[in-house]
Amino acid sequence: MSVLALETRGLSKSFGGFKANTDVSLKVQAGARHALIGPNGAGKTTFINLLTGVLPATAGSVWLQGEDVTTISPQGRVRRGMARTFQINQLFNELTPLETVGLAISERTGFGAQWWRRIGTNSAVVDEAAELLMRMRLGDVMLRQTKVLPYGKQRLLEISLALACQPSLLLLDEPAAGVPEDERHEILDIVTALPESVTVLLIEHDMELVFTFADRISVLVQGMLFAEGSVEEISNDPRVKAVYLGEEAHV
Ligand code: ADP
Ligand code: MG
Image (cartoon, rainbow, N blue to C red; front, side):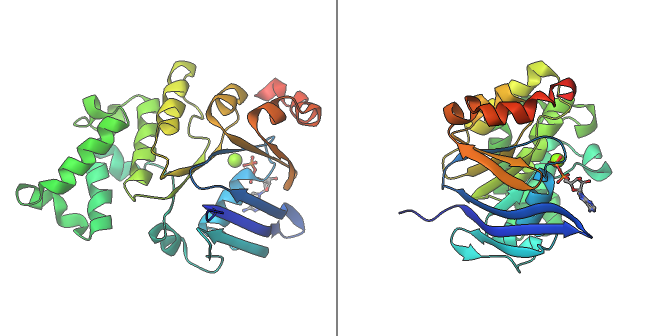
């Protein structure tokens, strides 16, 4: 059997007396398009924070491609192939997508922040950045300032930035949140079309997008794994429907 891209064993997180994640044991196959769904407050973002090491787990372990990374720093996990989307800050707003992604690639390849000055001598960084941005359908806007881009394009740039680390596992926490309806499908289409060498774990609230995207779905409710299965199994599971029924008002 092939090595799992990601596995958690009994992963738990308490904030004081409140249990945000309880005994979560999840397996993500290499190359999967795996979705993690659940009502607001179910503990999905907390789970991602435990995976990336932003928060220490209260109990349990995280395994990345067969390696126990539970005590490894967030940066160490990135180096081992785990990437998540970044929030774009003020600095990046002033830069173009080409500069932003170029910066990330040159960090990875060891050129550091000097890369833009070396543009004449090292076009490999620029070529890789441009190629990635074209794949993410940002080619036509890659020379504009990030702050003038439509929100959906900015979210695609966040994903591009994560991909610049050449991850084997991409963690996406509601990448289409706040994006207008007509741009949401584009984001998910692009993520779906990523090469199989990139395993994707997606948190998404829009069920239609989840059912189009995923080949495997796990459902988290009140910090616990509640159900898991194929799109067909989850979409027909009356218990899952019941969980979401009370939610529909604010989906
Ligand atoms: P989801 O992403 O599924 O909406 P979260 O993981 O953001 O859920 O939150 C799960 C629960 O944990 C919520 O009740 C939230 O208030 C709580 N929580 C999240 N982070 C913290 C924190 N740093 N301190 C205390 N409680 C937190
Ligand atoms: Mg969340």
